[in-house]
Image (cartoon, rainbow, N blue to C red; front, side):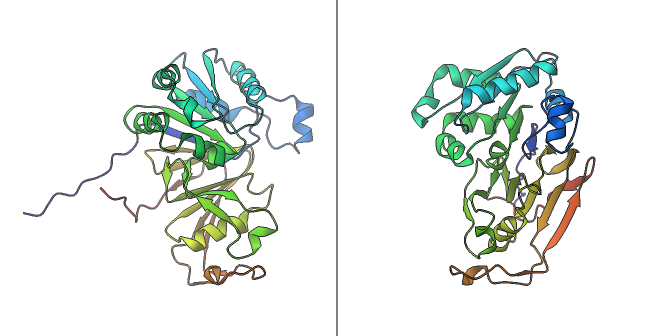
Length: 288
């Protein structure tokens, strides 16, 4: 009798992956300075609506930021505008601080957790392998926890995770630096501020080194909502660029030196705008 195949459960939770600079209810004058990239709080409103509570508890994690108090104040004001009063602030400078029982209890009670921007490497180095990350993953899979992240907070959700690669370096083969992210999404690489900061080539480098991975470049004031772990819907004022390397035929990414520019042939690209949907390919199942 053939052994029955096991399947990893589809997450009950939702992810809201934001490309940075999401609208927090700025005045028209401030929005004009941002080149009119959006005038509604659609993204933060959607994040709140995904919570299965009329009065959700939201914990904002500002660990990635060097100005955690100010970052929290900005989000406290923004969430207040969409009717959220029950909002907490978590910020850790070291791994030792994450073992606090009160902090863990707050993660267990939260309806949603939001990772603010800053340095994504700070998030992975502080939370990787901790009880907090384990609880977040378990609640994302088995409960209905909503996890949001913006800019660095969004990039850290994925694996692989880009943590370095400037606009000039991205064109040189082998210059983009990648590590393991928090792994709420596997075989997915998230990059943010994607169009505004011209990051297409650095994402292409990641895909060239691992064609099984799907790259998702999320523009500012734009987000993807992830349901069931694989179903994606775009929202916000910009676009999401999906880079698929499954059928690439040639690249020089393994022949790098300090001068050689990247070559990559037959890469597939989708450009998706608001309300567009996409299903993440599942051709690389995890070990069971």
